[in-house]
Length: 179
Ligand SMILES: Cc1cc2nc3c(=O)[nH]c(=O)nc-3n(C[C@H](O)[C@H](O)[C@H](O)COP(=O)(O)O)c2cc1C
Image (cartoon, rainbow, N blue to C red):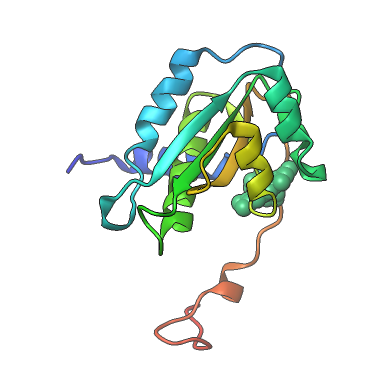
């Protein structure tokens, strides 16, 4: 195991706290090598039985981006983002766990992007699965679990409010306060 100094530990925790959903992006293109680097890292996300049921579709084509961006009213950040990444999972490979496996991979991607100074926002896909499958030519066993709008941030949003720790934590059994 790699030992981490107390200072590095704090830096790593701060890194997690400084991620934000980014919805406005600079026009600057994202080098494909960086995207590949990020997707390479995401291979190391945990998955049930290490089945790795995910695939990633990088979307740079403006027409396809536009179609995905108009799939529902909250998907608009994709239209002006330099690229999108759709994370899909093969439900035949991991019928019980494909949703959570894919969510893990998505978070790995978001955090790796953040580490490289790139921003992203997770866009809802689960109410429009068939439409997204049609746009991307995805076979029906591949369920798009998330799509990300990706680019260099053109905004620095304040942190969104979070529930208090004591509202959401228990010791041993539900209802018994931890704090
Ligand atoms: C499953 C899921 C679906 C989301 N869908 C959308 C979406 O469709 N459009 C959007 O702008 N943000 C979407 N978000 C981003 C959330 O709004 C955001 O993560 C939340 O407000 C907390 O803000 P933060 O990510 O900056 O901490 C989604 C996030 C998740 C995890």
